[in-house]
Every structure is written in structure tokens, then in C-alpha cells.
Length: 204
Image 1 (cartoon, rainbow, N blue to C red):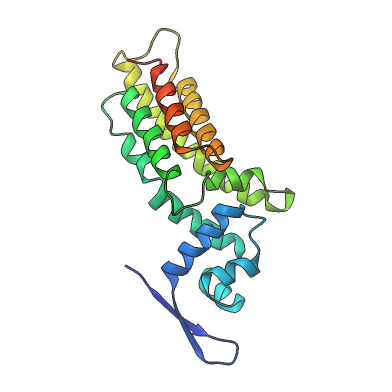
Image 2 (spheres, rainbow, N blue to C red):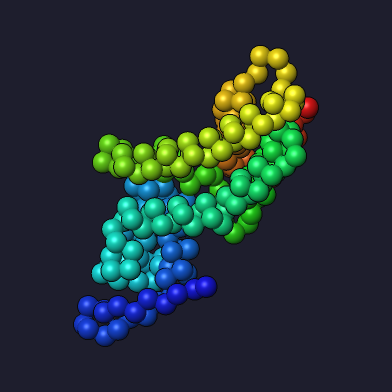
């Protein structure tokens, strides 16, 4: 449910805005530019609020980014959670790759991965942002490793393959897909990448 934030404008007049809508617009700015390149001027212009309003509603820029990242994971990466329910490791990979493909094929969202874009463009002054993104990624990887351990116990893995190695392999494909999308790869090219990845997928 959307919420409306009412705070004082610089001249004392109450300023009301939809906080969920403003956060969604901030997410798009961070997604296009990465954390550091997203200026406060661009953020407030996109959100339709003043800097004092932003600080009052969200805290500082770092806090705003973390809230935007929560929204990104909740809405844009929901397929990652549902993929774990697939009956086989191959099914998990297929759902993850097709979910990423569908997101990157959207005509209304920026291309690429918010986490990859932001960590790749973070300097020393934004180490906390990089650390937060890396921590979230590690949590996703741990969940996938656990699911692949179940698949290994069910006899799906070829001899010598480990759940951790297969997880790193799949994440490398996912990140590569998103990087290529951000670099201008066409929907047809990305679809071919997913099809090729599944053609050589090593589990049953």
C-alpha cells in the first residue's frame, strides 16, 4: 500500500508526496547511473521533492540507496526466490536465466544489474555501499548453494562437481547476461545466450 509523507517545506508549508512513488523513481536513477554517479540534484528532480524532504523522509543518500535496493530485490528480483522451488537444479537455472532475461527485455526499466552497476562504479568513499551489495549477493549465493546441495544429494550432479562451483558458474552467467544487456545486447542475443547456457548445463 502506498504511503504519503507529510513534512515541512522550507517555508513551513506542509509538502505531501507519495513516498513509495518517490522511492521507485529514485531506484530508476540509481539503476541507470550507479550509486556514486546518481547526484542529489538528479535524485530530487526525479523524485519531485526537495533535498530537505529527501533527508526527512529517507535519511541520507546511502540510506535512500539501501531502501531502493530493498525495492529492487523485492520487485525486480522476485524470480530469484521462486526459482529455488523448481524441482531440479536444471529447473532452478532455467527459471533464474529466464527471469533475468525477462527483466532485461523490459522496455520500461534500465538495463543491467543495479548491484553490479553500483559496485563497479564505487570508489573508496562508497565502500559501505559495495560491502552492502556484496553481503546481499552472498546471501543469495548461500541460498542457491543450499538448494544445489539438495540436488546433489538427489543424485543430479555429475561426479566431481560441487554445489559451490555450480553456483559460481550460474552467477557468472547471470552477471554476464546483465552486463551484456547494459552494454546494448539485443533481446535476440540475450535469448540465444540463455538457450546456449541451458544446452550446456551440466546437471540432469
